[in-house]
Image (cartoon, rainbow, N blue to C red):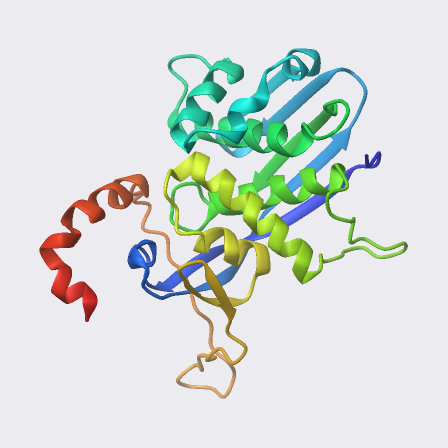
Length: 268
C-alpha cells in the first residue's frame, strides 16, 4: 500500500447536446471545463478515516477498527438503493443533514469500503476535497468528486500505479487505468444520482471533448474551435452562472414517465 500523500485533480464538464436524452440511449456531446476539483490524500497511522469537504461544510471521521468489523458483503449484492440505506447506518449522520452533504459522505464511504476492503486492513487516512466548481450547477461537480476519490483510493491500494515519476510535478494515468477509474467513479455517481448516464464521470476522467452513447465513449479529435467574430484568434466557450440550481434527480425520475407520450418524437 502506498505510504506517501497524493494530490489528484479532475475537471468539470458542460454537456453541449443531449443533457437528459443520453440516459435513454441518445447521443451526448460533452466537453471538459477549465475548472477543477482537487483532492489531497494523506495516509497515517492514527486509526481514523477523515473526510474534509470545506466547500459544503463537511468534516467527518470514523474509527478504522469499527469499519473493519463491518460485514461489507452488502456491497456485492442488491441494488444501489439498498446499498445506500446500509451506508446510512455506517455514516452515522444526523437526521437534519443536508442532501448534498449526506450524499457526498455516502459516496466516499461506498468507494472507500469497496476499493480498500481487498486490503488485509483498511487504511487510516485523511482526505480533503475542494473545488472551483459550484455545487448543483450542472457542471459535473459530483462526477469530478467521484473521479478524484476513485483515482486516489485505487492508487493508494495499488490497484493502479502511481503515474507520477521521479522529478515530475504532474502525471497522467494510462488509458487502461483511466478506464478502471471511470468504472469506479460511475459507481460513486450512482450513489449520488441513482441513475446517471455515465457521461459526467467519463468527461471528468478523460478530459477533452467526448461523444457518448449507451456507455460507448468516443473522443472528439477534431473538435470545432469557435472564432471571435472580430479577430482571427480562437474564441472561447463561455459558461455563465444563472444561480438557479435545478435538481438532476427530478428529470431523471420524470422523463421515463413522460417518454411514452413523446415516443414518436424521441425516435426521430
